[in-house]
Image (cartoon, rainbow, N blue to C red):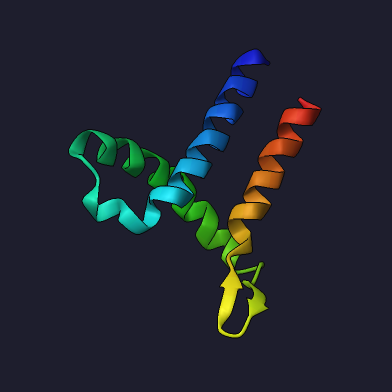
Length: 83
């Protein structure tokens, strides 16, 4: 049970870093690029699946927030709480 919680915490931190580094993925040092690619292989299919159900939230004229990352974070936090 503790290993699952540790893994979920790693995924939460990875999700945060993934969202921050995504616009700069082509500029990453090769050492960090491999870590980014690891999290990309995990999160990319999940985001593609969630985007079929969850549309971006309009927050301004021509400005929308991708809600799939927020939904995934909520899922991870709920899993942490109930495990």
